[in-house]
Image 1 (cartoon, helix red, strand yellow):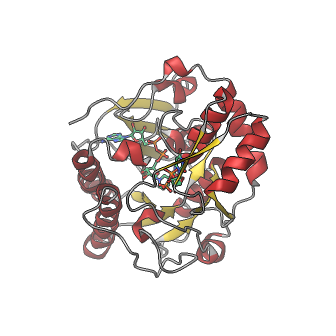
Image 2 (cartoon, protein in one colour):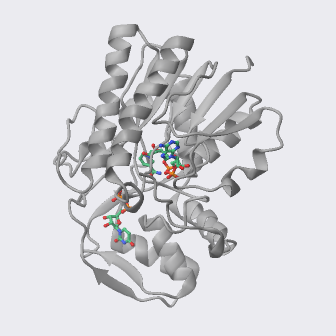
Amino acid sequence: MKIRRIVVTGGAGFLGSHLCDRLVNAGHDVICVDNFFTSQKSNISHLLGRPNFELIRHDVTHPIWLEVDEIYNLACPAAPGHYQYNPIKTMKTSVMGAINLLGMARRCRAKILQASTSEVYGDPEVHPQVESYRGNVNPIGPRACYDEGKRAAETLFFDYQRMNKLNIRVVRIFNTYGPRMHPFDGRVVSNFIRQALAGNDISIFGDGSQTRSFCYVDDLVDGLIAMMNGPDDFHGPVNLGNPNEMSIALLAETVIKMTGSKSKLVKRPLPADDPTQRQPDITLAKAKLGWEPKVALDAGLAKTIEYFRGLDLDQFRAPTPNF
Ligand code: NAD
Ligand code: UDP
């Protein structure tokens, strides 16, 4: 195998830390770039002594000069509570981060992959979502800083490809869960497991009939690597996610059953612009990358619950103000 110099921005986060694990274990020279806005060193502390792993505390809204062969651009708060904490910064991170990393890719002639999102489809009227669907995003709502930031980043990737012949790859990630999710990120899987383990009420936003499709982190990391190593003429965008769609109410019941919790379900107001349904069509990923998820929800949830049982919640804090 040819060892490559690989940058992972957002490499200390939930997905990024698992990606760094895989790339370091494969023998690559890995540089993790992160400002720890929504993560903490504990996600990557086990890698710090490895000779082929390097950590740089850096904010991607500022330029950075590195000599690399591949770039995975994951830096961006991803949970609604995190990205709405400072929406202007979220937009800057997506757009200025993309420009800075694309500039690095152009200078180094490096391959570059963008972690985009199912949120580019907004509250979708086409179901399941195919990549050709252009979406239904509210450009002025509370989710827009994230959705439109990611859409603008996709635009930049394709313009750099057309103008500079950059070797780009764009993946649209659907809801992914697993160990190392931030316990206070407010996402549904982390919230439900934390609430169930503490015996607290389980917060169902709305009536719980809205749907999501949950992918286990190991499958998603397989997909990211498959896309980076996929055909050079396949830029995407390509959906990565698990098509196993379910209602939020059913997810709550499943978590209660699996944790043996006595928690009750309580209804809370549905946040503005919360998508009513979401399911990836992964035909393209199967055809172009030979990728599809393998981990069933029960198996993935069992590992995630085990991780949350072992957490000392005092070691985690809410996002740092980051204006
Ligand atoms: P996360 O919040 O755990 O990770 C994001 C990481 O980026 C964190 O370590 C954070 O500190 C870092 N970061 C944020 N702003 C930064 C900045 N300005 N400079 C440098 N680092 C910065 O979230 P995640 O779930 O691991 O998401 C990773 C990527 O995948 C994000 O780009 C997200 O939009 C995308 N994504 C994730 C999901 C999912 O379900 N997990 C779904 C769709 C898309
Ligand atoms: N949700 C919920 N209770 C919670 C957190 C989230 O019912 O404690 C709902 C939320 O309204 C949404 C779904 O679960 O319909 C997924 O929310 P999440 O924030 O995980 O991701 P996203 O909305 O970005 O898909």
